[in-house]
Amino acid sequence: MNPHWVDVTGRGVISSAGFSIADFTSTIMSGRTMIGDITDICNDVRFTNGAVIRNFDANAHFDERTLGNLDRFSQFAAVAGRQAVAEAKLADAGIDPARIAVIIGTANGGGDILEEGYQRIYEEQRKPRPLTIPMSMSNAPASRIAKEIGARGPVFGVSSACASTNHAVMMGLMMIRSGLVDVAIVGGTDSCGYASYFKVWDVLRAVSPETCRPFSTGRKGLIIGEGAGVLVLERAGQAAARGVKPVAHLAGGGMSSDAGDLIAPDSSGMAMAMRAAVADAGVAPDQIAYVNAHGTGTVANDRSESSAINEIFGGNRERISVSSTKSIIGHAMGASGALEAMATIAALQTGVIPPTVNFTSADPECDVDATPNEPRQREIEMALSNSFAFGGLNVSLAFARAQG
Amino acid sequence: MGFMRSEMQDKSIEFSMDTPLEGVKIDSIDVIHVIFKVEEEYGATVDMAPDSKFATVGEFVNALIDFIPADKKVDA
Image 1 (cartoon, each protein chain N blue to C red):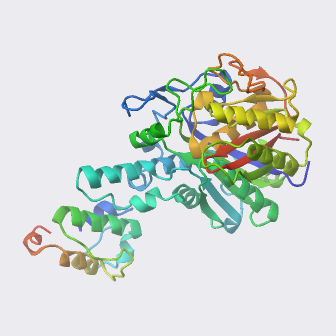
Image 2: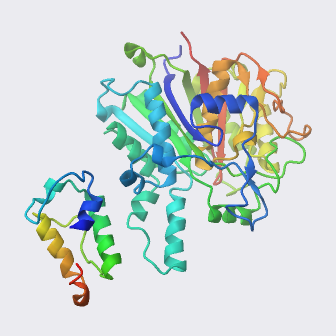
Image 3: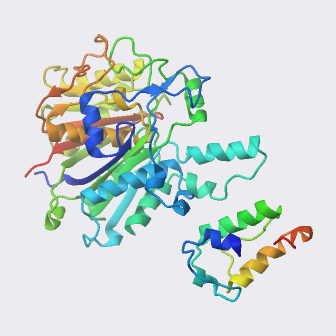
């Protein structure tokens, strides 16, 4: 195995597709979309659907006092973090707390508590809740996870819109490779199911008035999702001493900036990130068999991403599978990379490519095999997971099937 | 005193005005919540930094009472 690779030893997820890796994987692989009606939350925007989390019981996970100090995005991350730490058997593993990093991405920060605060200030003429600042800060999820596990090393939040998770993962990867830490707990979280969030997206005109159809004809935009995903990264082979096998390897990653348009995608920037990820993993492009695409379902993103994929992988539709799980779980913003990393790892583990659902017919401008509507049996060794953010920020992660 | 008890992490701890503040195990977040409750309940403006140092529960409580308007102090 390439000495540059690190092990993924733990995973956790809170999503509209389930609150465990098993449930999430089952839903993703079945292609059962979680996109549904959101008009009970907001009914005066141009769209009526989202992929919001409906039945997360925070009281089952936190005592009343703790819950009063944690905004929803931190709750998601903390619970996903507990799952990841449990799978990695990190508790009592004897890792020096100063050599454990926690880096969690978020696009929005604590939007729920800010929304409540503005409502109190401007509608109710009251003071905001006293902990609005520490609850809404973008590092709150990382700080919460660090507190729960006693991590005393580098702990911070990363915010780069929809690439937040992948940037956080890159930070963890680099810290382990450099020898700065032994364990990096990385991921992303965002809570998006509140009215003002739907309204600000509405005015941007990027949300589909019906559903999410990545790479398909008739696609009309993204669908807002939410959730959290957390990965435990550690030096290759380190976990074997406590009887833990990696679930996958994080082989490498690539980052790029468009240095151009704030919201319009740039195919060259996407290609730069993917090319860098493949090179960083130390493999040839033809060793990549699957791309879990950013695949938002907007006309521009999917066209640009298809072009970039074909630039890197030679336009060989037969050789490389592509899919967008956003058609199932929506666009979870800063958490999207985390949920899609889980889907990518699941594909490596199970030999099944998750489908792009809601697909009607192939768009000639998206010349990729988008795995339309049905999962596909395919044993793969390596895959990319793409995240491309407003602001022209692109990160592609390369995962490999666990060896040994 | 009641506000303090409601914010304490360990509500089984017995305390009086003479109890050292560190003995009731309240952290900076709890202090902010107590101050906020006093402001909401008594219409007070508590001009106190959350990291203010007090030796005992009594010192903290009396410092808060100082900020409560005179016509509402009887309730406190």
